[in-house]
Image (cartoon, rainbow, N blue to C red; front, top):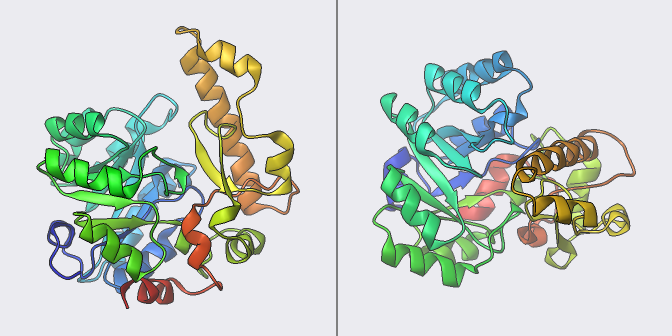
Length: 316
């Protein structure tokens, strides 16, 4: 685990990125990951204003330590109305890397590279992996079918070797990592590192409700279901009674409207905004509408722990 290309790219001790998680990831978590010798990433959408985003980047730059690294995740499609301004602020303040999701990374790669910021791109198949490589991405985040949140359709055993064979930039596996044995497995398949999210939800530093954290402790891989009711894109959540009540499929109206090319992007935007609000309320307030995003790797979560102890579990 001490000589992969991800370690070289980010100057970290261990080939691990604490994945960006909506509402969960914050500066406190990333500071602890940097102290532990890995990289940490936060969704830019976790900050309501550009001033808050700018302040967070300044804080992280001031707290940066040798052997650690930090970056931000950008949703680069039209559902993120703040995208261009977020990219500008990130480039102005300076970070180590950006992870792009759900859209073309072309503009992000162009602007980030002007500031020597590396860009890693989420992909779920070979077609888009080759496309982002051609656009100049520094590495590929291979999102498999064990990932939490927005997941892929292919297993790690299918996805990683295929991308390693056909791509010339490093492959970072995302999904299905809850312990060191899982990391060893992904590296054995050819990945140069891993992106780990769900095990960090039940961390002391996560700024979410104790109920959300305890749900990750009490539930396991068998309690994760995929829903289309959050962002319009399949997303994994804990199968709470509320999720069972509202169902996991799009309504018939959404299905019909999504077939209309002119209306499709607006339907997706509305669904994204409604779903995001539901997830926000569930993660930050006491509510019966429990929509808790998580992946099957919570199987290994047995207690709420400090970030540094979760990292130790992953590397030892």
